[in-house]
Image (tube, rainbow, N blue to C red; front, side, top):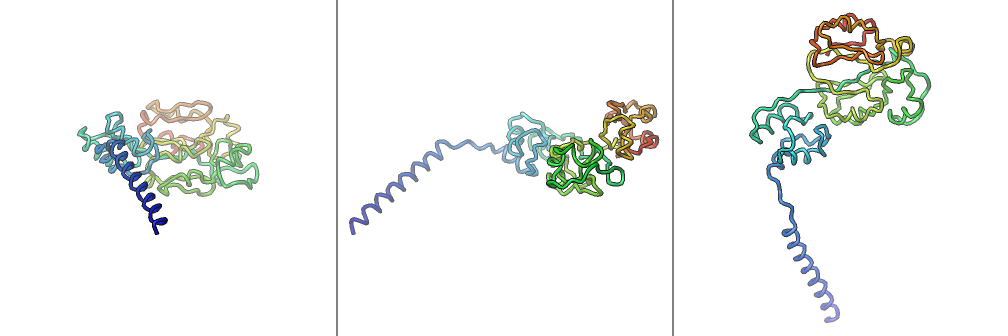
Length: 262
């Protein structure tokens, strides 16, 4: 009996001693909690998207607690979250520019064609490695849904070969922006403005051959805009949202109908 009991007691004693050592170590080596950071993190949506520029919600909360970040950087949380954080920090109301993601391409199957039959992985990132993808427009949307998979809010669908984003569901987290291998998705401020829904930078003649609505850099929108909000670079029109007054004159004069009013 003693031959069994003695080893059991030894093991039990070692376990008890180890437990006491771990308990003491957890107290001595404990990292002090930042109660303010924890309170801020509870106000954040928990998307951990990195749109704020920090390593997720905990990183942003820690930076806010230390006064190293501004309250209005959480796009998924929006103005309400910014207001709540501002109140907690005692900084008052925080102004936040609301944004949504937009796909700068209208290259649907009705407007463009495929230069080849693609039978590979159902991924834009994979398809773009094969001669830029199946689309005849080398700048156009591939429609394989990498942005759809990246979106946590079910705000994106692929319809007729091109991605579409529901502005009401979009939280401007920027995950789709990072997921698009062609860089066709950008965050745009929510305000009355004109948007050139095309990213083609080829000369007009080349663009016309591959897309019915591609921008050809004809300069008509530039000449029409009284606010001086439009310029053409690399045969492609660009609208400055800060200068755009939302008058819609450019959209009316665009012969390619690639400028939409947002």
